[in-house]
Length: 116
Image (cartoon, rainbow, N blue to C red; front, side, top):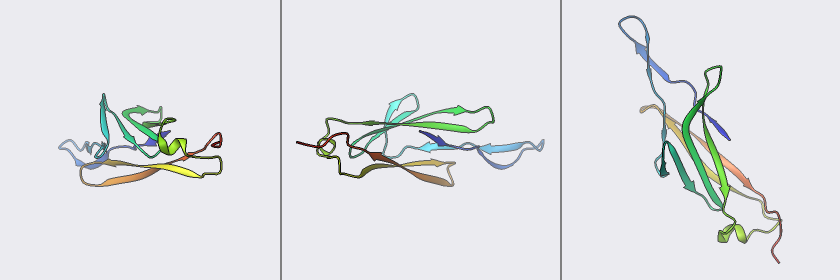
């Protein structure tokens, strides 16, 4: 899953009329730092990994990646049956130091078998 980071905010113009930008960065409050710009957070059924090493597309858009890993040994996961309809949700926030935007990454958890 990619998260759209967008372009930096423009906060004014310099002496040669060049745009001055204010960079956007991840607000990782409550996330575990794994090093190298990678963070993780454990949910109810697994862990979301947030890699903030931005990928830039040919058209100049910036993305970070989110990767979810279900924990098949977790008590909550083990107690799901095929009729359960559950989700793991995580808040992902970016800020420029003044303004912030938060999106909720909601991941459906689908049981592949029922308990016996």
